[in-house]
Each structure stands twice: as C-alpha cells, then as structure tokens.
Image 1 (cartoon, rainbow, N blue to C red):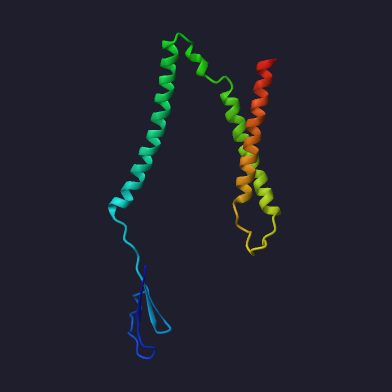
Image 2 (image 1 turned 135 degrees about the vertical axis):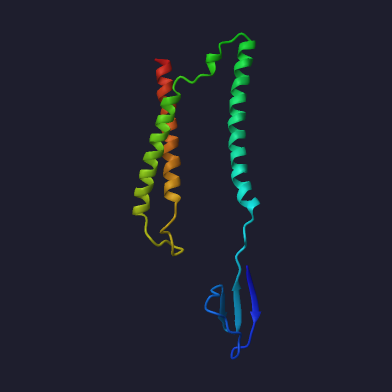
Length: 152
C-alpha cells in the first residue's frame, strides 16, 4: 500500500537514516507500508488445506466401501473392483512423466531465448506440454498392452 504526500522541492521534511520505508522523489514522498498478518490468517490456510485433503481421502475411501457393500448385497464378487494392472499403469505413467520432463528440458534448451514479444526465456510451457503428451502416451500404451494381454 502506498501513501502519497506532497511536499515542496526545496524545503521538504527531513527523514532519519533509520526510516528506510520512505523515499522522496520529485516533490512527492512515497511511504511504503507493509500489511501486518494476523494470527488467524496464518492459522486458517493450513487448517483448510488439511481439511480438504482429509475430505478428499474420506470421500474416496467411503465410496469404495459403499461400492463393495453394494456388490456383496447383490451377490457379486467384490474383487471385480480390483484393477489387475494398476501398478503397471502407475509405473508407465510415472515413466512417461519423467520422459516428458526430460523432453521438456530439451525443448526448453532448443527454444530461442527471445521470441516475437521479446521474452520467451523462462516459460514453463515446454515442460507442461511434453509432460502431458508423454504421460498421455504412456496411458494409451498401457491400454493397448493390457488389451493385448486380456485378448491373448
């Protein structure tokens, strides 16, 4: 927040050396003020984040439990919910993300440092593009691999 107070150019107020938040410039004194955080602001954010994470995990666990109970009530086997190739899927996804980050690094190094607008040096766009592209390709590869194993 900035407060602006006008003063004359010749005889302005004298500021002590210890007051580093005030600057005098062209007859205008700029005073920087910092907003003080209260205890409640520092407390609310971590509590809210913990509550959201807990809520997401709780909803996921209870929905899986309800699905299993519904399958048992209908006389079906609850092992139908178990994914046989889940670890293969997760491993291929993580490998795809790693390869995507590597290709994003290579793409970032090969991009020109100044584009049409004058600054393309520090953009995270190649990392996002290649991570999503390679992660998606890994999931598509997992689909074809599992489909071939189930058919053959």
